[in-house]
Length: 195
Length: 88
Ligand SMILES: [Zn+2]
Image (cartoon, rainbow over all chains, first blue to last red; front, side):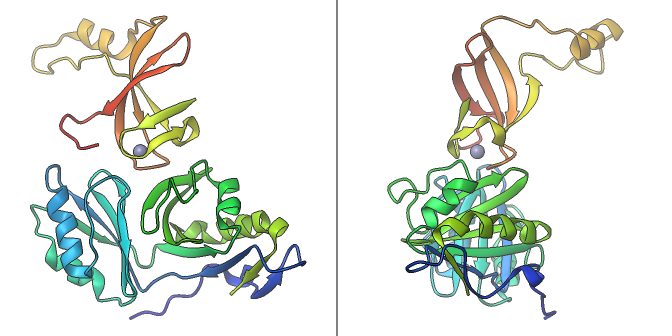
């Protein structure tokens, strides 16, 4: 497969930045997986699509709004009515999912070279993301594995809570560097470490 | 103004795109004359009170919605998927 360069370029500066006293409030990393695709169901086939994603990835998924699941190998979450973002560690996932979704169930679109995923982790992750997006990041409103589709101004973002204190934010690759710059600026006050 | 999306829940107005009056009925191209098309394209009731409107949750789930909004108070009275039968 074709190797992808990170779109963050020189703006990805590993190490400690911003407020320097105590432990960093967040850790920032690019975690773009090998396989990224969007699976979309025709009206009425939402449950069949969720089932096909589950059978391909091994994830327990349903068609309720924003539902999602993660494993060491793959992740998936709802981003709209009948639409899921599905990612995996191995680039064979897109072809496997496309083969598992019949034409009368829905479509699978390969986005592996069109998206960038950034992870914001640490005790102040909710606070930092709360400055960028107008949605509730608190644990009671946003469960581990669940997903949200939202936007930072004109940068569409699809966000999955990947752990109790960690979020994976997926943006268009061409916006990734600009979003990263904003993320770093938002994290300065709490101190951040780039991995 | 918050609009409660049937899929995403309450979201800021900035995530939505206004797509116009939802009370219009498209004339039948087989029989409609110029007057009917003129009325469809240009004439609006502009009510003070509840109004049905198309909105898209462009900065979210991207669903097209029918929003019933009070044009005086901006209260959002009802939101439903624009496509009948679409699950929320
Ligand atoms: Zn929505």
